[in-house]
Length: 561
Image (tube, rainbow, N blue to C red; front, side):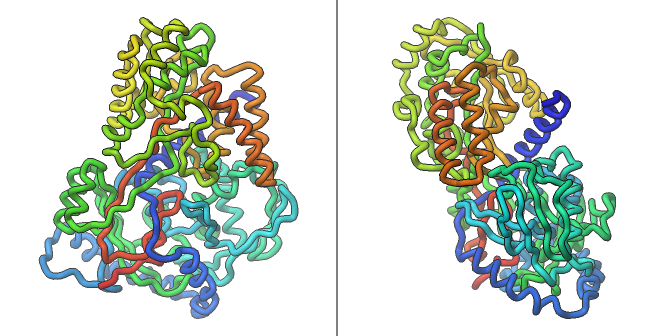
């Protein structure tokens, strides 16, 4: 691969994974009722609900100005009267990290999940891997690389334009040209893919990629006819259940339900996202009842629960991991030295100190909550079976010549990663190994990780838009080499990339299992514990379910008395 193309793909992966990590903090949990049933029921009603005049969407938008003052006022006015229930009650949601735009190719971090109320993907995936059709209704498999994609009919954008195959192709092309979102369409063969009719696409891949379709859940469909890059920053046009009535950057975003939504009636008519970035301000907003949903610092979970909120734990499909430089001539070039570091890490202490004991330790290199995780991947090596063992760590450190050396441990500067670094530093000091902790900002940290001569240990959370282990395990060792070379690396690469590009699921699983045997023996990175977050909601809010991008389909949510 040419260096320029490699760097571009690498930058895209890292940018998207940063976005995924931020989005994941928005939450993902169980549900009060079945999302697939609700979504499919709404879709079956689409033709009837959209058979009226197409101007209804425009009429809906023309009424937006009537709610502007109320949307802003709700944020600052205190009302001690009982909150209404049902459609009359506004859903107040705490959101953070406003990107300053509502363009679906411009939003990053936690605010990306907000867009799913305005735009919609072709399909989505639950945290347990269950597939949910949204703007697409089925795929016919012609071969490993050719498919016939069938789209929902009778769907309209909020401006009244009909949703067709042209909008899907246009959105794919826009994603391809955007470095941050190019991975959404990484395997699409644009030369062969073509439109059969308004609701059917002959969809081709350059090669089969197990993560391609799951990764497309973050490809939100845009209207080709009205597309205006500048206008969409403040006035988004999507097929989703809500339209924007008021948006003030870093303050609030007010949404109103569409009366012409193709998916059927919507219980909650108004949503107000309030931009709250400081943790204690979020706690204050929950304490005063100013918001109905919010991400909660783990240290405050017990307090928030005491206020009567329901807490949904978010196992985000990511885990904390220690990545090792394996360059020849460096302290961790031998696997015995790397084992010494792994045995010195007290994973339970990390969970207790960093995550208030709410996170399970990881007994595999990747998260147990990736959508394709298998139970047989657990405890495949003594470093996971035995775990924290200072005596064994000291023995291996002495054998490998690690005792007395100083390791460079780099972080992205986040307080959680710095705390994790200090825990690892303490464990290594206990076995006679010194550690210098070096913190960078996020962008600089990624650059440092590209060159394994810059560090001995790096703290990183491996993730992918697809939330698939096969994607993570195949792609990261390619993008971030860690200095791993030789016959074992070649065999691992053939097995892991073979798994990623194999259509047969049973064969793919076996290839990845064989690759993992090599991985845990070599120990290029060591899984520590799950990355977990918590989200609070009022108990009367039911039907809440988080998907793998951290989003909620609020058209299926309601207030009950």
